[in-house]
Image (cartoon, rainbow, N blue to C red; front, side, top):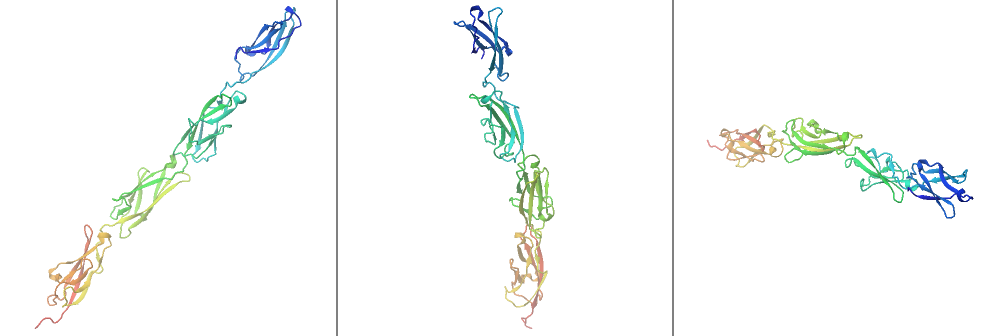
Length: 421
């Protein structure tokens, strides 16, 4: 500090009175007039000498001085002597560490492995010894509380401490402290910005909504080409090019196609006419592939059920039946059984039998079981009235509206002698 005194050894002169030591001068080396000399005469006649600090010293600018001091007496001519004084300026902790840059930047991949070095910060301190020894740390109160990063206190190397996730956080801001090792340390800060570059670590996700009334994977066989069957929404948590997803459709034997308007919403539609009677199920597979290297893919497989419409009438095993029975049989006697089949499903394929009522054909002589198709006699037959009665059987399905077909049953009666001359 200015005014600080340092006593120096005085010059000794054997003469007495006016001829003894009368003063001291700084002849050389007093750079910047850093020092002055002050004297006082002791009771013993010796002229004592103090070196006084005259200005603020800065060790970091000049750490040593070499002064040339001259002592002179009062003789004529005066006699002198010269002494060289080496001064060393001791350090105090008056300098904080200084980073070589105030802000650091780094770009790292999301898949960088923990333990990998990212960058190195560097600070210097003009002080010496412990006052100039720099130690580094991350200010956890202001940054990175989750400890994604650590720093080597000696070297300033910042290292990844645990896996990153671009989708959770894309930019990490660190406040790095540099402090010296003094008893009362000086501290300075630098800011480190770490940008995380996306890595293709997330596969696309698909949501499929089927557009049937009950939300199940089914479509009517009467659906026309262009009719939508399912809606697919696709997302990818990754960023940029990795989020570009291509969707494709496999299976379906060419009966279904995929269409999109914005590459986010896709629609499965009927591409060709369906026929449940030809095929009632189709297995489809939807694949979503992103643009990463290597690409990631998600896929979903499902079975589309083709539901029936009443597009087929019942068909008899044969268009014409023939049966020979005796003229005299009891009512309720078995005549024959007709059979019809319907390719449709469910109620559309359920068959009900009936007889077409034709008075001239004596159809009232017979009846038919609506379920089994068994024809029986319903009343007394009479060969003399009609030896070859014919009846028309109608097979009707349960569709809405229903479809039907007919078959002809020719019955031959065997005459018996039941009439007197």
